[in-house]
Image 1 (tube, one colour):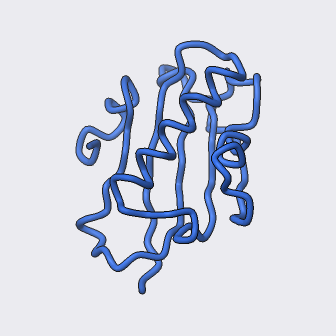
Image 2: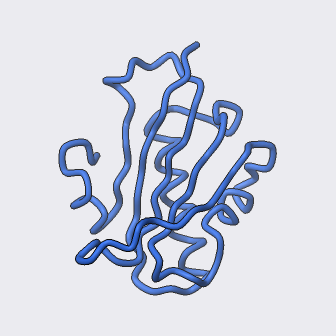
Length: 120
């Protein structure tokens, strides 16, 4: 079994804790499903949020999904002029037999514009 990394992002419509929780849960669930993963396959997960998001920690959504024994951390994205606002990004380290070329990175909604080359 190899260690791999999978990326994902979602743009929120508004900075509201319930909305963030819903959107991050959808993103994390899509990452798991599209890569045939379970919580046991997760090694660690980094969450980042753009500086305009203040309502909650994105990692709280993972805990709400029952991912309780995986190290999670949140950080703030760089404040770059012209960057897409209200974006939560995920970088998950996983154990998987999938080759790198078959890892499904997930960019939901408007966040698909961030990585048109790999968005599913």
